[in-house]
Length: 140
Image (tube, rainbow, N blue to C red; front, side, top):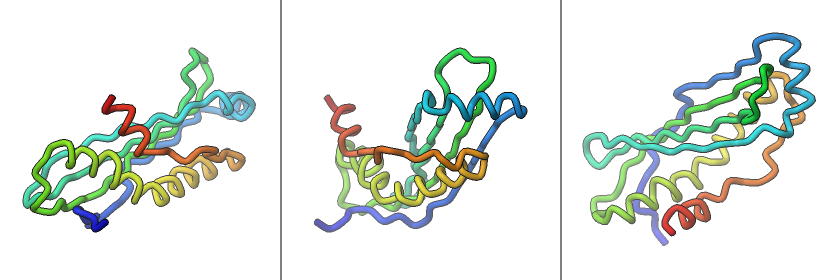
């Protein structure tokens, strides 16, 4: 199947790692298994069938702890969609699924580098994010 879009550029728009002090770092190191990865995708139409897609990953503790670290990355993809894509559903699938599957290896590598460089080298993302599955769940 030929792709009906092209990624013209991708880059880190914003990146954040916050651990306020050494006590928090030690606490988080012992409790990081409780942290959850959240993903948010939004887009903004630009000129000439181009779309800015912002993919945000957040890795945070949902528990009401005093001591917590916070990690976030906003990754931008500049996407040009083919002229023959007219249907809103097709466009939605391209942005939420196809583009994400294509950029995910770079996004994951960058995000893991952030976590590792923030003092948590043992962190691994056990499961790859299945954007196709997420999209199907969203559609139901």
